[in-house]
Amino acid sequence: MSAPKRFFCNLINYPEDTETVLDGEEFVHAKTVLRVTEGTEITLLDNAGNEYAAIVTKVEKQRLTAHITGVNRGDREAKTPIYLLVGALKGDKTELVVQKATELGVAKIGVFNSRYCSAYMNGNKLERLNKVAREAAKQCLRSVAPEVEYFENFESALASAEEYNNKLFFCEFANGSDVDLKSVSGSTALVVGSEGGFADEEFALAKNSYGFAGMSLGKRILRAETAAVAVCALAAFSLGELE
Image 1: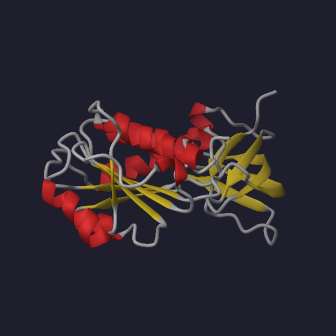
Image 2 (image 1 turned 90 degrees about the horizontal axis):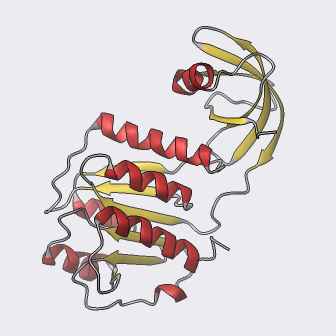
């Protein structure tokens, strides 16, 4: 028997209220794609780590009502926060990176503009990226979807990682790695560029003004989306999240 379908819901007030409503995109997906009907068992997620067992009691044109029967704390979230900062990529490549980073347990994702970045972002694209994160979180049984934020200013992106224990800047022209990735512990921020890579002064700014360690991914030049997924996997493994 398959596990109950999962839906993010921001109207949960359990245990004060045992009835809740699912509407918007999540309702549309539940009704038109997954064909949820009255009596269906579902799992509701509050995006704060809680998972609510519920039974659908009523399906209407624009919403459904569910009766919550219990709550558990999700156990699929990474113990150590990983923050991915990636340059905006062309086409749907940024969506791919967001999807895979979510599956690998990344807690937060920042997309930034930089000198050699040729992709652009707008409000609709940002909402699409957050939707991709939510769908990926449900698919891999996470109970929290990472927030995706956009930084028009490169310095703002770097500054957003100030509180992380490890700040690693992956660059194609880095002369080796300043830090042994296998030995890192604690919260970790990862920076990867767009297809155009980084300018020399951006690399210098990250190291000299914001305390990032320069990092290399070896002799081969990876595509931007490959590098972004690879560094997430490497960091998750080093931090013990893939054991």
